Every structure is written in C-alpha cells, then in structure tokens.
Image (cartoon, rainbow, N blue to C red; front, side, top):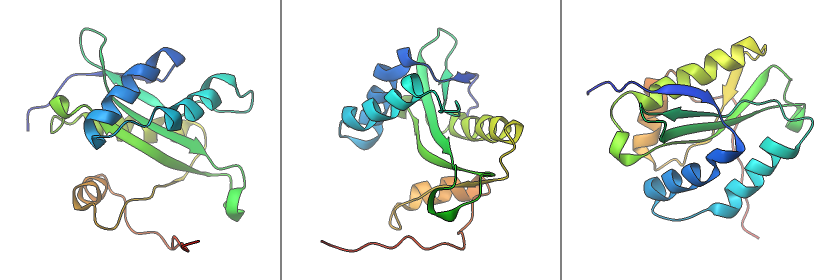
Length: 150
C-alpha cells in the first residue's frame, strides 16, 4: 500500500460538489439530496458543531471525506458520543492510507471536543467496510439496530 500525502481540514460549503462526486464514484449511485440536507446543517444551523472533514491532495482537490455529528441526547445517548455517518475516498486514491488518516483526524478532532465514543452503522454484508472499520479499531457495540418493514 503506497501512502499518500493529503491535507485534512474541516469541511466547508464549497466542498459539496466534490463530496457528491466522490460518493457517486464509490457507490455507483448519486445521492445529492442526502448531501444537500447534510450540508444545510453544516452551513446554516447555529447549533451545529463542525465535525466533518475532507482530505485534499497536493493540488487542493478533495479526494476523501468523513462526516459525523455529535449526539445531543438522541435515543437516550449521553453527550460524550458522536456518530460517523459517512466516509468516502475517491477510488483512484483508495488503499493509500487516506481513509485511515481521515478516521485518525476525525477522532483527534472529536477528542478535543470531549467526545469519548464514536458509533457508526455498517451493512452486515459489506465485508470490505467492516474490515476497514475493524482495522481502525471499531468493534461491535452493545446496541442493536432494529428495523421493521412497513
């Protein structure tokens, strides 16, 4: 695995197109509305604490991102926890340590905010993503995600 040198910084409104582009390349489907809602919170909410980050290559091109949010009492979860909602690295830049660097910077940023635990959800059948999170010291939690068809 060839390590890549990227600069990680807080996400800003101008990163919207790059994030949507990377997500589409990774998932092979476009989700601009999902990101529009996420970015509205990022840019417009007075209560939002910035936690989302992007990785830029040497020429300033956004090549990866991680998005998260602090819990403020949802589901009875204490306020020293956060969620990692979405992570994406442009396929041309994968397997170069960028995802790990994003996770590490995300964790450092959250620690500085007083966060002590991060939660994320992964599809049970997405073995690559499970392996990625496991390699970054995530493990199964004590909560169970429940669902019901309606």
